[in-house]
Length: 283
Ligand code: SF4
Image 1 (cartoon, rainbow, N blue to C red):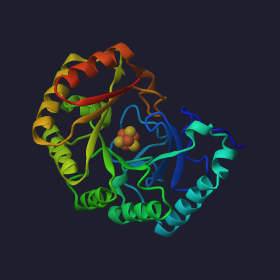
Image 2: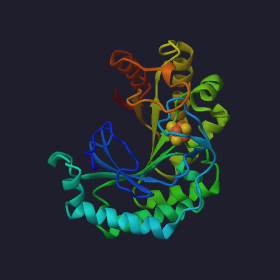
Image 3: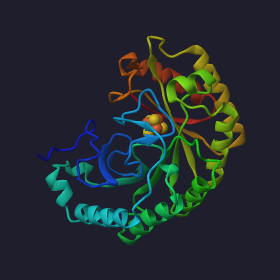
Image 4: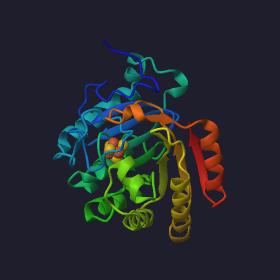
């Protein structure tokens, strides 16, 4: 049965396509066309709040470029002819492609020939008049930014006027291990943010939540603010999306997580703003 899409329905199989999934996105304010390279649900991180079911450790599988091309063309045609909006009962005010977002069920920069994939998506979107009106976005945990494969892709993304949404949740060793399952230390992470912002406009996305009843932890907050000061001094990054949990985690610690209140998020946002950053808050 075909269901209508909503903010809470991010079912990646809803269109029956392998690489493409539509999301009515709060963040984008309309239709976001997601591109998922990690069809094997493999990521090099293991965030406690991750919504990917059956998440495994690993990298994206080999990409079928012809299938990606066919699916993207087919899907964009369907949108432009109105068929998609009719079938999924998308409200008129949300009938706009806000962005094409390379995101998905794992770290997208782990796919081989990442630059070729970015170029293919960009070329089709230009040819079909989706760009430049819609944004081109890469959502990444940034952990592979030191690798040539990721850097080449960012150069191409930049050529299409795209932007990077870079995940940065914690500036402590404990927090990065506990919240993200990341082993990369802070100085490497800061170096990677620098690499990203030098190659393509980069914004930070940071998810804060109550883990095991600890609320917003003072030491985490302080370390994060200290790291932001360094980021502000050494990069062009000046935009941050601060958000909390909106949908259930599919990971084993799901029951230990709770969203933070809007009041807590807003007060934290003000502290970040005092460092000179633009902050949007998504509760
Ligand atoms: S980086 Fe993204 S896909 Fe990977 S574990 Fe974290 S939330 Fe899930």
